[in-house]
Image (cartoon, rainbow, N blue to C red; front, side):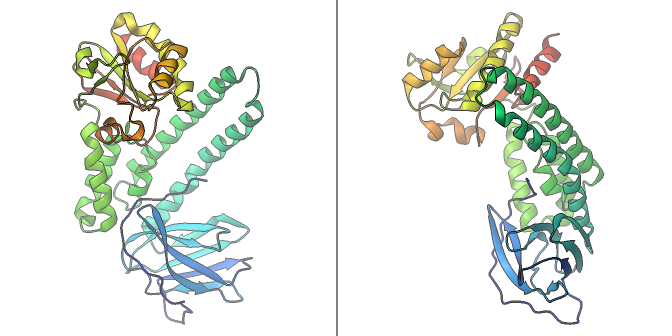
Length: 367
C-alpha cells in the first residue's frame, strides 16, 4: 500500500510520554481492539520518519498528544508497526481520531479540514492500488510461462489503463482542493514529467498562505527545479561519444521529432520497453521520427551487444559512467527507462511515454 509520504525538512526530537489530562488536547483518539500499550506520533520528514512523542493507551483505548505539534506538517500515528494513520495538523488545531485495530484503513478524523481532505484522497486511491495489486498477483504464475513476453504486454496494457484512470482521478481531486495543504502530497502522486502544470498550480495556490512553511518551501523549490525541463521548454543539448568514439550531439537531429531514450543494457524494464520503441520507430521513421539512445552503461561490450540484440537501429551515445553519467544530474534522472520526446525545434513535447502512450502520442503528431 503506497501511502502519502511528502519530502519535508524539519528538526525534531523524541519527547517524554504524554499521559494526558482532562484538558483539550492537540490529538484525542480512541482505538478499539488494540493490544499494545503505546502509540508513537511521527513526523514525516525529508526521506525519514521521525518519532516525536509517545502516548500510553488506557484500558478503554483512549490516548492523546498535547504540545507535540510544533508546526503545520504531515504526521502519522504508528500503532506498533501494526498499522498507521496519516494526517495533517498544526499547533492551533485539535484533532479527534477514532479507529479499530482490526482495520486501520477505516477510521474517522475531524478537527482539520486538510486532514479530512487527505483521508478522502487516500480512500479514493485504494480502488486503484487494490486493482494494480491484483494484477501483480495474477501475473505471478506466468513468470516462467513460455509466452511470458506476450502475457507481459497484456498485463502491462491493463496496468497502464488503470494508471491513466488513477492519474485522471488525482488531477480532478487537485482541481477540487487546490488550496488545501494536502494538495502538496497529492500532487506528489502525479508523474511530474507529464503533469508539471498541476505541480505549478498547487505551488501558486499555496504560496501566499504558506510561503514561510518549511514543507511548502521545499515543495516549491522542487517544482521550480523540474519546471526547467517542462513541456514547451527547449531541451539541453547532449554531446557524448557513440560506440565508435565519435561525439554526437542531440542538436544534430534537429528537424525531426526525437525520442531521447535514457536506458541501459542491465536495466530489465528498459529491455522490455525496447521492442515497443522499435515498433514505433519502424512505423514513423519515414515521417520524421527518430530515437537518440543515451545509455547509463559502464561496459562497452554489454552496451553494444544490447543494441544489436534488441535491433536498436538509431543513434546511440554514452560516457559509460553508469549513474555518474553527466546526464543524470543534467536531467534529474531518478530511474530508467526515462524518455523525453522533443519536436523539430528541440522543444519538449512530452516525457516518459511508455507502452501504448508513445504510440498514441506519435499518432497524434503524425496522423
